[in-house]
Length: 250
Ligand SMILES: Nc1ncnc2c1ncn2[C@@H]1O[C@H](COP(=O)(O)OP(=O)(O)O)[C@@H](O)[C@H]1O
Ligand SMILES: [Mg+2]
Image (cartoon, rainbow, N blue to C red):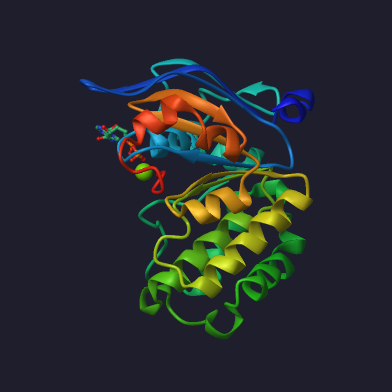
């Protein structure tokens, strides 16, 4: 995609490999994310999608290769250092604090963002995210009693409150209602309007095709295709990876 390569990269993976014991979860994956765009990361189960987000966010170390974020090689940085630099994520299996309130969970995102979210502005930023995701009414309730859909919205609010430069979303739509998916799409578009980028792993292909400008396709840990949704859909290697499931691309 010409425009994506013309602007300076927010994130670059260069020949990144990840090995878990005998499992090669990622093999020589190189990709580039420009500012202000929505990217999709798709592929069959076990393809290495979550591992890609983990290696970007610092929850997994690359066995080889480089992770560059806004010009810095962040490969040796801990997850909290990456969060302060502007990397935020959600988790495929949610990672919230059950004994804390909804508001306290969102406030954790503000604290994790460090100087990106100065103490004097934190309460207002937390209020804004609670409002945006329809969480104001439940903000003082414990997180543990909330529904799955609400928890997903809390995780999104926590990721966004620190105004990340890159938002990594691991299957955010799973378990959400149609209304909640619309709110998610609106939030993703709003993030991009601020110049931040989003990398979205999602099985809901309607959402992926509607939101993403550029797709990366993983299969068995390798990047087998990338490009616009239409180009990827027409790609022979992608069709082979999804053999027999042409209308169920993820
Ligand atoms: N912590 C881990 N330890 C061992 N193997 C793992 C670990 N995490 C993922 N894997 C393996 O790495 C491969 C890629 O997994 P993952 O990135 O979770 O795929 P996806 O998100 O595309 O479904 C799979 O074979 C998976 O079983
Ligand atoms: Mg996964």
